[in-house]
Amino acid sequence: QVQLVESGGGLVQTGDSLRLSCVASGRTFGSYAMGWFRQAPGKEREFVAAISWSGDTTSYADSVKGRFTSSRANVKNTLYLQMNSLKPEDTAVYYCAGSPRHYSGSDYGEYMHWGQGTQVTVSS
Image (cartoon, rainbow, N blue to C red; front, side, top):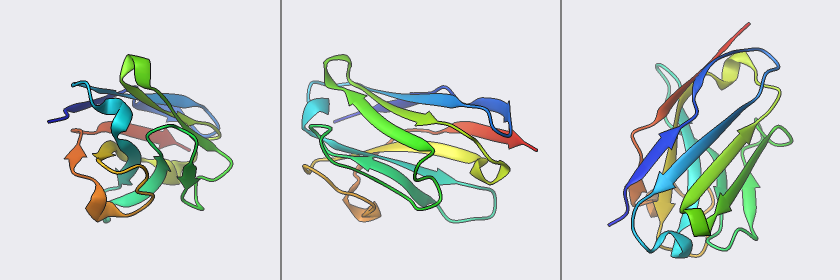
């Protein structure tokens, strides 16, 4: 069983940066593909970024490509999402998720473990 806890959210202004962290419990973090998803009020949860268990493969939603970067430190059981040039439309609750596969990309159904989320609010 993997438990995930996100942190790093907050209230920022347009153009600011934030770095989200997701700390995983258990010894198997290094064998899990990880993803970031977000959900804005009144909208469905959407894919943001994904990273393979080794960190050598990443993918991003078109809406965040070039602004967000996902990375991981397996020795620390931690996943990161660096968010730059934030926009009001990035406002959402951000969730990290874990998949027992090498890489799961945007395939929501492959992610078996989810954190509780961290709120990101970008003011205009």
